[in-house]
Length: 72
Image 1: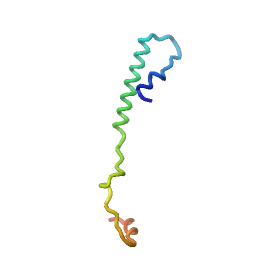
Image 2: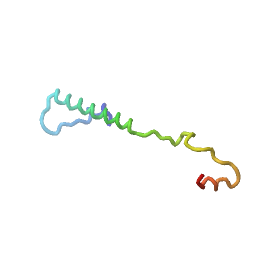
Image 3: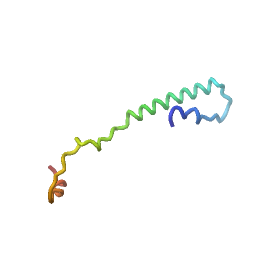
Image 4: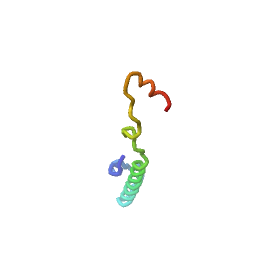
């Protein structure tokens, strides 16, 4: 849920809050959700599987695939 969606999903179960009180709750929810989204984006590690620098060149030739399983 993004910060923009927070206002659409707020439902009052009890009481009769004023417009100012609802605005304060929505503002607080937006701040918390925005910070959570930023933290999640910063915490996600970048995938390095596609980087060619992470692996050496593959050997070519007959039977060389068996050598790929041996420790170097």
